[in-house]
Every structure is written in C-alpha cells, then in structure tokens.
Length: 343
Image 1 (cartoon, rainbow, N blue to C red):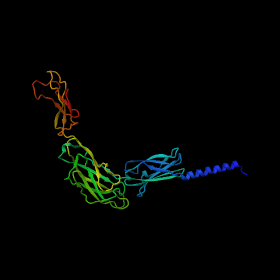
Image 2: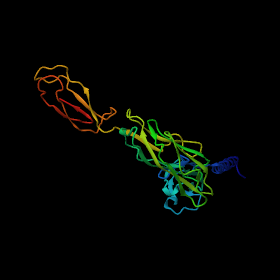
Image 3: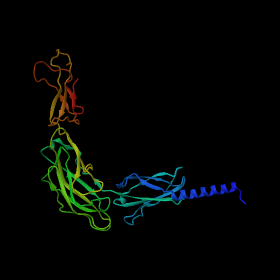
Image 4: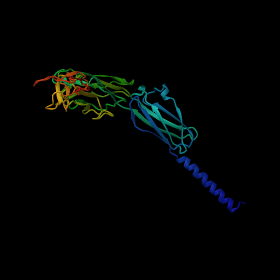
C-alpha cells in the first residue's frame, strides 16, 4: 500500500507532466518581417519567437502566386534559436521576385513547431534622368529632355483602380507644353491576363502637370504592368535663386506604396556660363603712392543672373579706370571657386 508521501509525490509529478504538456500544446511560435512589402534588391529582416531554446529552425521563402520556386533563393536555410527560443535572420529579394506574393515558413527541427507569414513586392518607380544639371541660361529658352520615368507594378493590381496619374513639376521648373509626351504600357511580369490600358498613349501637358488616365486595370491572376513616360521636357522658370526639387505624383488612380512623396525624378538648376565680373570687395578709397591697399579687392565671376560660377578659374586683371599714376603690385589673380582675390 502506497504511503501518503508517495501519493503526494505521484500527484505532484502528474500535475507537473500535465502542466508541461499543456504548455507545449499552448506554445505559439511566430515569425515576422520588418515590412509587409519589399522592392526587388532589398533585404527582408526576419524575427522568430516561441521556438525551443537552442534548436535549429529551418526557414524557407516560397512564391505562392505562381509555381516558380526553382531559384537558390527559395532553398531552406538553418538558423539557431537562442536560449529564449528566438532568432533573427535575413532574406534577399532578387529581381526575379518582382510582383511576387511570398510565404515565409519557419520550422523547428526538434519541436516541430511551425510559423508562417506572407509578404509581397511593391510598385516601384525608376526616376527620370537627365535633370540633374539644368543651366540657368535656359530660362525662357531651351528645354531639357528627360529619360523616363518608369512606374512598374511589383504585384498584380498594384494599380488597383482606374483614374488619372498626374506628374507634378517641382517649384521653380516648368514642363514644355508644346512637347509630345507619350506613355507606353508593357508587361512587367506574370503569365496570366492582360496589362492595364490607358485612355490615350499621349499625355496631357500643362506647364505644371503631365496627366494620363488608366481606363482599365490588369486582368487575369498575376499580370503586372509598367508605364514608361517619354518626351518630357523641362526648364527653370527663373535664373535665381537656383531651383531644385522632385517630380511627384498625384491623381485619382490608386497605386500601392506610391504617394505624394514618391520621387519620379529630381531636377536641379545650376549656374549658367560666366558672363560678368562683379566687384565683391572694393579696395580702399585712398592709398599712399607705392603702398598696398589696406583693403584688397575681391572679384566675383558671375553668370547673367548674378550666381557665382563656382567652377570658374579665370584670370582676372586689375587696371586703372580713373585717376593718374600706375597700378603696381600683383595686378592679376586667378579665380578660385569663382572668386578672384588680390593681395
């Protein structure tokens, strides 16, 4: 017959085992990423919790939108959980994943615990180029032609509604209203359905906006579209102060991850050609014959709008414009960053 002490021990052991089994059954591992959407070329930061301390956890990322998982990036890789059952790891989003819906699975080798989550790519913008050094001399004259921009869906129906897509010129710049700006739609990926359509392949251009209209979105299950603008021309509206800003987007079409701060191109106005010399520091009003001016002159090399031509290194020569007697000493100075200083 078991003693009371033995019965108490068995009861406690049974409670302990039952509690342990209940704790295991209630364990809820999780795996998360630092974002829900990633463009190609970015890195996914992954955090796992709730696994068995010290166990190997196999992680794997697979596409679930289409059956296309042959690449090395879709192979599983191991990571070791720490003493608390947590881990951190990363996964690189290759260009092949553009537009993908991806499922991350983490499986504990010892515990058998499994956690999953999904994430996607996003619509991406390749900003227009050619606007990084637009001369102030083009004010009221020649326009600069840009290349692009390009808007590409990262996932099917990133452009999810019909409506307008409007490119806005930054303050200090204007579009050429006489230019023919086109928007060309192409497939950005997927193997089912048709690309979106525009009401016209020719944009409506005003001095401050370029507008196209999406008349139908992607069809099918995974088709993705891209839109490429061509023929955009810009110029600054004033010679000074020098302008700089970004082409942005507005309109009524809904585009995933694109908002008013998304950059569709950066425009920068730079100084024009050297056209005049301006006395920045006047020499002393009087000086004893044969002595140096107590205040030596400094001369700016400027463009037509009064901007200092900082890249200019001209030789500036001082001469007497009024009065009598020779000008002696060093009468030439080489401009440095557009400023010639005599001594």
